[in-house]
Amino acid sequence: MTVDALMPIGELARRADIPVKTLRHYSDIGIVPPARRTDAGYRMYGEEQRLRLETVKTFRRLGFELDEIAMMLRDRTDQPAGLRGQLRALRARQGELRQVALVLRAALERDEPAAVHLARLRTLAQLSAADRAARVRHRGGAPQPGVEGAGPPLPELPDAPLPEQLDAWLELAELLADDSGPLRPAEMPTTADHSGNAGAAGDLLSVLHDAMEARSAGVTPDDSRADAIVDRLRRAYDGDVVRQVTDEVAPDGDLESRRYWRLVARVKGWPDQSPQAQAMDWLVAALRLRCG
Image 1: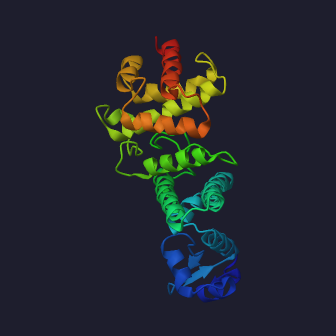
Image 2 (image 1 turned 120 degrees about the horizontal axis):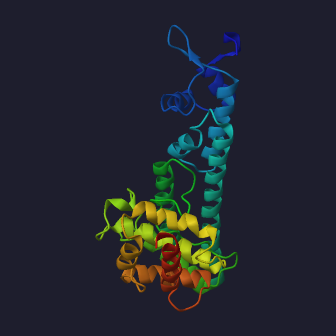
Image 3 (image 1 turned 180 degrees about the vertical axis):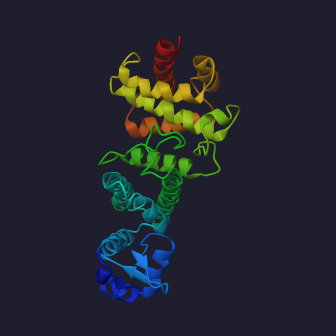
């Protein structure tokens, strides 16, 4: 791009219909850096920066925070990777909007007082804020089940949930949104501490959730698809992995673990018998096949 093709900050702000102050702020925090600066220090912008600015404006209209946008636009050298990150973030936001729509629909169908569904929306907002913080902290898209440090997952609601499924899901959301609770995501890998560490308990619940999903999908412990789940535990635990895992989480688990699994089973429509015990049986069998 030639120098003649560049425009000053005022011209780009005029074309984009935003205040110069806003564009200057975007430049200062690195979201829309200038193509170059003149000898006098004036910022100059080109077509690439104009397109980037339009992308930022689109994400802002969709409700994304600036730190989220910075994360989505961080990889300018690998366009496919950058687009995949943006797509993950948009799908996560789509999921948030779907959850709000389900809460509002339930309020209409049940003719509930405003205070009831407002409390539910507040819970969703808390969970969304925690989820967005995790995405920025881990510098990726939406946290996925099976990612270390992501904590136990919140299961997807069916398209037309029964009242008891929605109630269980909202109770789960409240449980996981409690940043001081025992199921909060770990900031460090689980090798840091296995003696009462709340984050480690949350990570192990996430592994057990994946084990139950695999079991429900017909994956047997000797299937190669179980390798990834076992590998996560082998990386996190030293020595006798089977003994450490079985010692740390008994089939019934602690009070909060039992509550988590009871609610997950209700949302997913799993059998009434302890899904955590079933997941543990599957996981221990998979571990023994690979770890002896």
